[in-house]
Image (cartoon, rainbow, N blue to C red; front, side, top):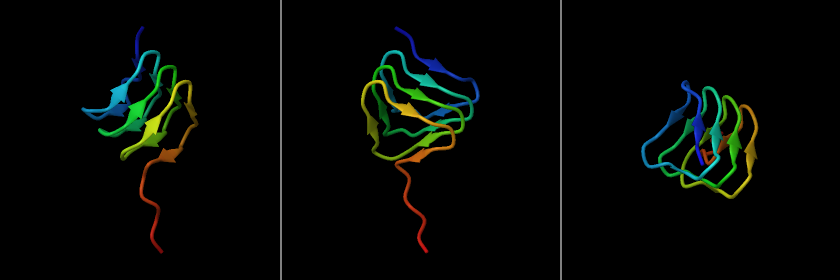
Length: 72
């Protein structure tokens, strides 16, 4: 099976992408991220840190997963 990565997406070296993963336009996938089979990351979403998603997950546009929250 194949992985689809849009040409504008950034996938850091070390990220683990299982079969049938789709990465949309302008996404960022960090080096410690693990994405399960059939997971789709829609445009402009970012996943960072030690973050692992299981099979058939869907990350919607502009979502930020695994990032540190804003300090006030």
